[in-house]
Image 1 (cartoon, rainbow, N blue to C red):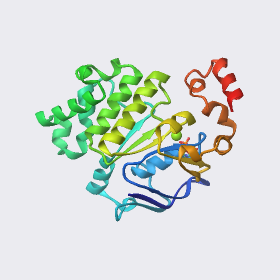
Image 2 (image 1 turned 90 degrees about the horizontal axis):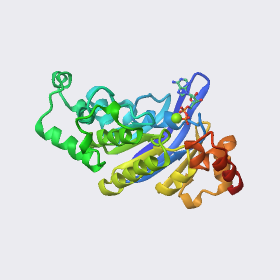
Image 3 (image 1 turned 90 degrees about the vertical axis):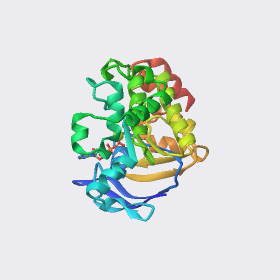
Image 4 (image 1 turned 30 degrees about the horizontal axis):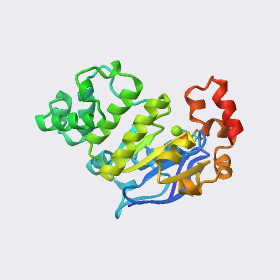
Length: 270
Ligand SMILES: Nc1ncnc2c1ncn2[C@@H]1O[C@H](COP(=O)(O)OP(=O)(O)O)[C@@H](O)[C@H]1O
Ligand SMILES: [Mg+2]
Protein backbone atom coordinates (compact mmCIF):
# COMPACT_ATOMS: atom_id res chain seq x y z
CA UNK A 1 0.00 0.00 0.00
CA UNK A 2 1.22 3.43 -1.00
CA UNK A 3 -0.08 6.31 1.08
CA UNK A 4 0.39 9.99 0.30
CA UNK A 5 -0.28 12.26 3.20
CA UNK A 6 -0.60 15.99 2.64
CA UNK A 7 2.00 15.68 -0.11
CA UNK A 8 3.07 19.09 -1.39
CA UNK A 9 5.74 20.31 -3.77
CA UNK A 10 6.23 24.02 -4.36
CA UNK A 11 8.29 25.73 -7.02
CA UNK A 12 8.53 29.34 -5.85
CA UNK A 13 4.93 30.52 -5.45
CA UNK A 14 3.48 27.64 -7.46
CA UNK A 15 2.26 24.56 -5.62
CA UNK A 16 2.78 22.00 -8.39
CA UNK A 17 1.39 19.33 -6.05
CA UNK A 18 -0.82 20.73 -3.34
CA UNK A 19 -1.76 18.80 -0.18
CA UNK A 20 -2.49 15.51 -1.92
CA UNK A 21 -3.89 12.64 0.17
CA UNK A 22 -4.20 9.29 -1.56
CA UNK A 23 -4.07 5.60 -0.79
CA UNK A 24 -3.14 3.29 -3.62
CA UNK A 25 -3.55 -0.41 -2.97
CA UNK A 26 -1.08 -2.89 -4.38
CA UNK A 27 -1.98 -4.14 -7.84
CA UNK A 28 -4.18 -1.24 -8.90
CA UNK A 29 -4.00 0.31 -12.33
CA UNK A 30 -4.42 4.02 -11.78
CA UNK A 31 -4.73 6.73 -14.41
CA UNK A 32 -3.93 10.32 -13.54
CA UNK A 33 -5.59 12.85 -15.78
CA UNK A 34 -5.60 16.61 -15.98
CA UNK A 35 -4.62 19.44 -18.27
CA UNK A 36 -1.00 20.53 -18.83
CA UNK A 37 0.51 22.00 -15.69
CA UNK A 38 -1.96 20.23 -13.36
CA UNK A 39 0.91 18.55 -11.49
CA UNK A 40 0.78 15.02 -12.93
CA UNK A 41 4.50 14.73 -13.73
CA UNK A 42 5.54 16.30 -10.45
CA UNK A 43 3.40 13.78 -8.57
CA UNK A 44 5.13 10.85 -10.29
CA UNK A 45 8.54 12.44 -9.77
CA UNK A 46 7.77 12.81 -6.08
CA UNK A 47 6.84 9.13 -5.89
CA UNK A 48 10.19 7.93 -7.18
CA UNK A 49 12.06 10.76 -5.46
CA UNK A 50 13.32 12.50 -8.59
CA UNK A 51 11.83 15.49 -6.75
CA UNK A 52 11.70 16.00 -3.00
CA UNK A 53 8.49 17.05 -1.25
CA UNK A 54 8.18 20.51 0.30
CA UNK A 55 5.76 19.03 2.82
CA UNK A 56 3.99 15.81 3.59
CA UNK A 57 4.76 12.14 3.56
CA UNK A 58 4.98 9.25 1.15
CA UNK A 59 4.48 5.99 3.00
CA UNK A 60 5.07 2.56 1.51
CA UNK A 61 4.28 -0.11 4.06
CA UNK A 62 5.46 1.64 7.19
CA UNK A 63 8.47 3.37 5.63
CA UNK A 64 8.58 7.08 4.90
CA UNK A 65 9.91 7.23 1.36
CA UNK A 66 10.61 10.94 1.63
CA UNK A 67 13.32 10.23 4.22
CA UNK A 68 15.27 7.58 2.31
CA UNK A 69 18.95 8.17 1.53
CA UNK A 70 21.89 6.40 -0.09
CA UNK A 71 21.42 2.74 -0.89
CA UNK A 72 17.84 2.69 0.44
CA UNK A 73 16.95 5.51 -1.93
CA UNK A 74 18.57 3.72 -4.88
CA UNK A 75 16.66 0.58 -3.96
CA UNK A 76 13.39 2.54 -3.84
CA UNK A 77 14.04 4.13 -7.23
CA UNK A 78 14.56 0.65 -8.56
CA UNK A 79 11.35 -0.57 -6.89
CA UNK A 80 9.38 2.04 -8.78
CA UNK A 81 10.46 1.93 -12.40
CA UNK A 82 9.54 4.88 -14.57
CA UNK A 83 8.78 5.13 -18.24
CA UNK A 84 8.59 8.42 -20.10
CA UNK A 85 6.90 10.02 -23.09
CA UNK A 86 10.24 10.24 -24.91
CA UNK A 87 11.32 6.65 -24.03
CA UNK A 88 14.76 7.77 -22.72
CA UNK A 89 16.76 4.94 -24.23
CA UNK A 90 20.44 5.39 -25.06
CA UNK A 91 20.20 5.44 -28.85
CA UNK A 92 23.72 4.37 -29.73
CA UNK A 93 23.60 1.34 -27.41
CA UNK A 94 21.97 -1.91 -28.43
CA UNK A 95 18.54 -2.85 -27.16
CA UNK A 96 19.76 -5.58 -24.81
CA UNK A 97 22.26 -3.26 -23.12
CA UNK A 98 19.51 -0.68 -22.67
CA UNK A 99 17.39 -3.29 -20.90
CA UNK A 100 20.32 -4.44 -18.78
CA UNK A 101 20.83 -0.90 -17.51
CA UNK A 102 17.50 -1.41 -15.72
CA UNK A 103 19.50 -3.50 -13.23
CA UNK A 104 22.44 -1.15 -12.83
CA UNK A 105 21.50 0.01 -9.35
CA UNK A 106 22.15 -3.51 -8.16
CA UNK A 107 25.67 -3.80 -9.54
CA UNK A 108 29.03 -2.79 -8.13
CA UNK A 109 30.20 0.38 -9.88
CA UNK A 110 33.07 -1.31 -11.71
CA UNK A 111 30.74 -3.83 -13.32
CA UNK A 112 28.26 -1.15 -14.27
CA UNK A 113 31.02 0.93 -15.87
CA UNK A 114 32.50 -2.01 -17.69
CA UNK A 115 29.02 -3.18 -18.71
CA UNK A 116 29.79 -6.71 -17.63
CA UNK A 117 26.67 -8.76 -17.11
CA UNK A 118 26.28 -12.39 -16.13
CA UNK A 119 24.56 -14.90 -18.43
CA UNK A 120 21.65 -15.04 -15.96
CA UNK A 121 21.22 -11.27 -16.16
CA UNK A 122 21.31 -11.39 -19.93
CA UNK A 123 18.77 -14.21 -20.02
CA UNK A 124 16.47 -12.23 -17.73
CA UNK A 125 16.76 -9.17 -19.96
CA UNK A 126 16.00 -11.23 -23.09
CA UNK A 127 12.95 -12.68 -21.32
CA UNK A 128 11.73 -9.17 -20.51
CA UNK A 129 12.16 -8.19 -24.16
CA UNK A 130 10.38 -11.34 -25.25
CA UNK A 131 7.32 -10.41 -23.18
CA UNK A 132 7.11 -7.24 -25.23
CA UNK A 133 7.75 -9.25 -28.45
CA UNK A 134 10.98 -7.31 -28.91
CA UNK A 135 13.60 -10.04 -28.33
CA UNK A 136 14.43 -10.15 -32.04
CA UNK A 137 15.80 -6.59 -31.82
CA UNK A 138 18.17 -7.34 -28.90
CA UNK A 139 21.36 -6.62 -30.83
CA UNK A 140 20.07 -3.63 -32.78
CA UNK A 141 20.96 -0.09 -31.80
CA UNK A 142 18.00 1.44 -29.96
CA UNK A 143 17.95 4.48 -32.25
CA UNK A 144 17.07 2.27 -35.24
CA UNK A 145 13.70 1.36 -33.72
CA UNK A 146 10.37 3.11 -34.25
CA UNK A 147 8.85 5.08 -31.39
CA UNK A 148 6.42 2.32 -30.51
CA UNK A 149 9.23 -0.24 -30.46
CA UNK A 150 11.39 2.03 -28.31
CA UNK A 151 8.62 2.39 -25.77
CA UNK A 152 8.25 -1.39 -25.62
CA UNK A 153 11.98 -1.67 -24.97
CA UNK A 154 11.65 0.97 -22.26
CA UNK A 155 8.93 -1.16 -20.64
CA UNK A 156 11.21 -4.20 -20.86
CA UNK A 157 13.95 -2.16 -19.18
CA UNK A 158 11.50 -1.25 -16.42
CA UNK A 159 10.54 -4.93 -16.02
CA UNK A 160 14.21 -5.89 -15.75
CA UNK A 161 14.29 -3.81 -12.57
CA UNK A 162 11.67 -6.17 -11.09
CA UNK A 163 9.74 -3.18 -9.80
CA UNK A 164 6.91 -3.13 -7.29
CA UNK A 165 5.40 -0.07 -8.92
CA UNK A 166 5.51 1.04 -12.53
CA UNK A 167 5.22 4.78 -13.08
CA UNK A 168 4.45 5.95 -16.59
CA UNK A 169 4.48 9.62 -17.52
CA UNK A 170 2.33 10.05 -20.64
CA UNK A 171 3.78 6.89 -22.17
CA UNK A 172 1.71 7.09 -25.35
CA UNK A 173 1.73 10.82 -26.00
CA UNK A 174 4.32 10.48 -28.80
CA UNK A 175 2.79 7.39 -30.40
CA UNK A 176 0.27 6.73 -33.14
CA UNK A 177 -3.01 5.06 -32.06
CA UNK A 178 -1.92 1.52 -32.96
CA UNK A 179 1.34 1.72 -31.02
CA UNK A 180 -0.45 3.50 -28.20
CA UNK A 181 -2.75 0.50 -27.93
CA UNK A 182 0.16 -1.98 -27.98
CA UNK A 183 1.90 -0.07 -25.19
CA UNK A 184 -1.23 0.30 -23.05
CA UNK A 185 -2.10 -3.39 -23.57
CA UNK A 186 1.42 -4.26 -22.40
CA UNK A 187 1.04 -2.15 -19.26
CA UNK A 188 -2.29 -3.78 -18.52
CA UNK A 189 -0.85 -7.28 -19.00
CA UNK A 190 2.01 -6.50 -16.62
CA UNK A 191 -0.46 -5.12 -14.10
CA UNK A 192 -2.73 -8.16 -14.30
CA UNK A 193 -0.16 -10.96 -14.64
CA UNK A 194 2.54 -9.68 -12.31
CA UNK A 195 0.35 -7.76 -9.91
CA UNK A 196 2.58 -4.71 -10.29
CA UNK A 197 0.87 -1.45 -9.39
CA UNK A 198 0.74 0.81 -12.44
CA UNK A 199 0.34 4.57 -12.08
CA UNK A 200 0.04 6.22 -15.44
CA UNK A 201 -0.30 9.89 -16.40
CA UNK A 202 -2.53 10.12 -19.40
CA UNK A 203 -3.53 13.12 -21.40
CA UNK A 204 -6.46 11.52 -23.16
CA UNK A 205 -9.57 10.53 -21.32
CA UNK A 206 -10.60 7.57 -23.49
CA UNK A 207 -7.38 5.74 -22.66
CA UNK A 208 -7.80 6.28 -18.94
CA UNK A 209 -11.39 5.07 -19.13
CA UNK A 210 -10.48 1.99 -21.17
CA UNK A 211 -7.48 0.81 -19.19
CA UNK A 212 -7.63 2.00 -15.59
CA UNK A 213 -9.47 0.65 -12.54
CA UNK A 214 -9.29 4.04 -10.99
CA UNK A 215 -8.99 7.57 -12.31
CA UNK A 216 -7.51 10.45 -10.37
CA UNK A 217 -8.20 13.91 -11.75
CA UNK A 218 -5.83 16.74 -10.93
CA UNK A 219 -6.29 20.45 -11.25
CA UNK A 220 -3.72 23.03 -10.15
CA UNK A 221 -1.93 20.52 -7.95
CA UNK A 222 -5.05 19.28 -6.16
CA UNK A 223 -6.87 16.00 -6.52
CA UNK A 224 -10.35 17.01 -7.70
CA UNK A 225 -11.65 13.56 -8.67
CA UNK A 226 -10.89 10.05 -7.44
CA UNK A 227 -13.10 7.21 -8.58
CA UNK A 228 -13.88 4.57 -11.16
CA UNK A 229 -14.24 5.35 -14.86
CA UNK A 230 -17.99 4.87 -14.46
CA UNK A 231 -18.11 7.49 -11.72
CA UNK A 232 -16.38 10.08 -13.88
CA UNK A 233 -19.18 12.00 -15.57
CA UNK A 234 -18.61 13.95 -18.76
CA UNK A 235 -19.37 17.12 -16.81
CA UNK A 236 -16.71 16.36 -14.25
CA UNK A 237 -14.23 15.47 -16.98
CA UNK A 238 -14.97 18.74 -18.78
CA UNK A 239 -14.26 20.61 -15.59
CA UNK A 240 -10.95 18.79 -15.05
CA UNK A 241 -9.74 19.53 -18.55
CA UNK A 242 -11.25 23.00 -18.97
CA UNK A 243 -10.04 24.57 -22.21
CA UNK A 244 -8.25 21.35 -23.20
CA UNK A 245 -11.43 19.25 -23.08
CA UNK A 246 -11.98 18.92 -26.82
CA UNK A 247 -8.45 17.72 -27.34
CA UNK A 248 -8.45 15.40 -24.35
CA UNK A 249 -11.71 13.71 -25.25
CA UNK A 250 -10.49 12.53 -28.59
CA UNK A 251 -7.35 10.53 -29.03
CA UNK A 252 -7.28 10.94 -32.79
CA UNK A 253 -7.15 14.70 -32.30
CA UNK A 254 -4.00 14.45 -30.19
CA UNK A 255 -2.16 12.04 -32.44
CA UNK A 256 -2.97 14.05 -35.56
CA UNK A 257 -3.36 17.47 -34.04
CA UNK A 258 -3.51 19.29 -37.39
CA UNK A 259 -6.40 17.20 -38.73
CA UNK A 260 -9.64 19.13 -38.49
CA UNK A 261 -11.95 16.11 -38.98
CA UNK A 262 -11.57 14.21 -35.71
CA UNK A 263 -11.43 17.37 -33.66
CA UNK A 264 -14.64 18.66 -35.19
CA UNK A 265 -16.34 15.32 -34.56
CA UNK A 266 -15.13 15.33 -30.96
CA UNK A 267 -16.86 18.65 -30.39
CA UNK A 268 -20.14 17.19 -31.57
CA UNK A 269 -19.73 14.14 -29.36
CA UNK A 270 -19.22 15.91 -25.99
N1 LIG B 1 11.34 22.10 -12.10
C1 LIG B 1 10.34 23.00 -12.06
N2 LIG B 1 10.59 24.29 -11.77
C2 LIG B 1 9.60 25.19 -11.71
N3 LIG B 1 8.31 24.92 -11.91
C3 LIG B 1 7.98 23.66 -12.20
C4 LIG B 1 8.98 22.62 -12.30
N4 LIG B 1 8.36 21.46 -12.60
C5 LIG B 1 7.04 21.74 -12.69
N5 LIG B 1 6.82 23.06 -12.46
C6 LIG B 1 5.50 23.72 -12.46
O1 LIG B 1 4.63 22.92 -11.69
C7 LIG B 1 3.34 22.86 -12.29
C8 LIG B 1 2.97 21.41 -12.56
O2 LIG B 1 3.81 20.90 -13.60
P1 LIG B 1 3.78 19.40 -14.08
O3 LIG B 1 3.87 18.52 -12.90
O4 LIG B 1 4.81 19.26 -15.12
O5 LIG B 1 2.32 19.28 -14.70
P2 LIG B 1 1.74 18.23 -15.76
O6 LIG B 1 2.64 17.06 -15.82
O7 LIG B 1 0.36 17.92 -15.26
O8 LIG B 1 1.66 18.96 -17.07
C9 LIG B 1 3.40 23.73 -13.52
O9 LIG B 1 2.92 25.01 -13.18
C10 LIG B 1 4.86 23.76 -13.83
O10 LIG B 1 5.19 24.95 -14.51
MG1 LIG C 1 3.60 16.21 -17.44
